[in-house]
Length: 424
Ligand code: NAD
Image (cartoon, rainbow, N blue to C red; front, side):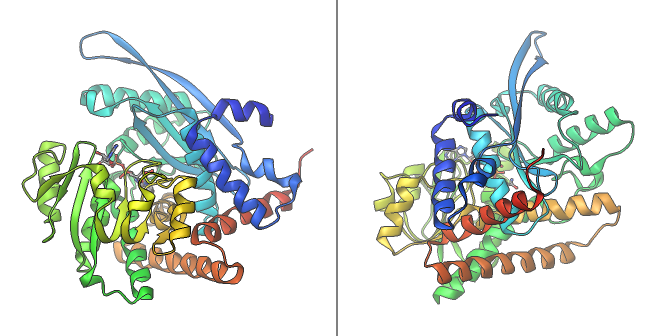
């Protein structure tokens, strides 16, 4: 694909944001011009029409995508998002970030991402199953355990990964657990995968608070997004003794300065689907949550929620990016100029998910399964190493923490591409 085609195909605010991050990092490490576009733009993408028979007998055609950004260092890896606002450009940006993330934490993967334009909450269980299976059916020739390995993201979960694994296995004629990660344990899912992203976020937050000399028992935490990542981050941080003072989902938030009972909130969401009217605190809006005074602010929902409008108003000490791409380029600059907030950049902060997905894939390929303790101990080891590398890079070059993480991730992808050479 030429640069011109790629720029129009993916053009969107979020893709431009990911490209600007790349350009800044490439400039900072003087990446040679010859390797830049090859490293920056996605390798290939597939758009598919997904007809699904509805409960009333009618047929709706949904639109789905898969973008494989980098296939130079191993299969590509990245989640599948089911959300009404999915665009090809968003999927491409998320695929880019997966490449830098896998490279930063040293996994033998390139980045990818998938998405379907759908509000999964508006489908029946049967319709959701048909859509998930149809998506995988259309992707069968485009992915595989050694080509591209999906996982859950916003709006998808273990159950959906199970249907996708079953669809692929039926197609190839044998059980192929390694084709997706984030599966139910009964289908080869890894111990610790469901909670891995949140557990990783909480572990890194704990480590950075230690560096800042802030006792975690005195830390207050506000979390936007109470799905897989937000709720598991809340549970793990509460487990360390932090006080979770606010949580939210797409319906709005709950604020309780004395601390929210996270398990009670989870039980409420399990029965009611959303946090709306949860009585564990007073109401607050998502915007108010982001501007709440707290030690740690955790965006754990969608991209581009910290903007030039609210960046000057943030009142946290640590901004832990559990979501992918929550901070716009303009907001980044404002926060850097302010100098009073430590950003834990997404590609480091939420990397626990893909690390344990990697463990799941390894276990599937070897048919040898690990205990949860082994999984978590290995996860912490990788996160420690990545954090140390980022801090070293930051000090050595006087970079922001985001630039340090991006330059490490991007630099390694570019190096691999250069080592492989350009064929023909
Ligand atoms: P999820 O679907 O389980 O949860 C998403 C949560 O965000 C829900 O509570 C939803 O109500 C809330 N939300 C949606 N729109 C919102 C809005 N406009 N305002 C406030 N809240 C809103 O998704 P997830 O898997 O927890 O993913 C959350 C973020 O973490 C995404 O950015 C995703 O890319 C990133 N991430 C996920 C994983 C993973 O393993 N699932 C790994 C790394 C990063």
